[in-house]
Image (cartoon, rainbow, N blue to C red):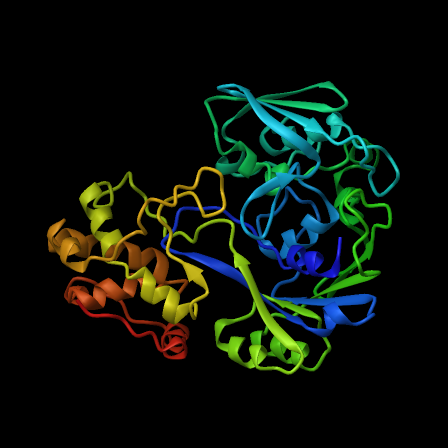
Length: 412
């Protein structure tokens, strides 16, 4: 694996949800990190690690380590397409059955050989609470799985409760990360989470909580040795400080890159900005079981009232795409013929009674705006003059966010 390929993998973040806009996980990398003979790579990310177990967290800051220490059964490339990883091939043999052919040349960092026993255990622990060291994932990843089989060392069979055409995509996420059954069985989960053993291009060396995690190259990696000797992943919460570290050469890659720092990094003599599409969608979730959000016309009005193009342009500085459905671009099931989710305030006004919309906004502001400056909610409240129905005063932090982004909204 060359240095450029590793930089893409190191900055990779993954999630999946229904949302108003697809955004990129933006990273910035020093040109020197790809053109010099430097053998140590320093990565500065926003948050400290919370877990080294790939099934114990859904945070991108944890996955940037986990996806390099561990392999997934299927791998998603930066263009969003799915490719073989620990599973060399996969096929649906029946409406509710998937069969995966596993690689036979993979070894764990402790030298043990990877087999279907590991793959079966890894999936089982994500949905079956009775499994030793279980780490249950959310419904999106595992709800469809009924049971698994490992008929021979090179085959994994997954039975689903219903036809699930998104199973390959799930196996390219944290649900498809594979951990070593024999090692966990021998040392226990606590020791595994403190000193994990994986099969990925980097192997764990040490971790200083609140500071950094050190990883060394796996010289025997089945996919080819990564073109660095050591990777140090540092926790640097402040956006401006991360950018400064990169520009001073104290970091080779930073992630995420805050939109407001993009121009400064892009204009640096030895730095560049690179991004890949986030393999998922940002979501503004609502409870469809309670009034007034149980009314589909209200939900339609909410969707039509959100100006996603302006959000991408102004809030994300163009680093994003407006989705055309719940399946992101790059997935085999993505339909490019569908149009992007529309912004039509006129239709939003006529699709539901104003007072009902106001009640929906009132409930949404009570839920979301206490914690985050959700401009996507503020926008239609401002546009439609619904403030007379909604009691909301931005907090100092929210006012700062609104000023910082200088959000310009198109008026209906």
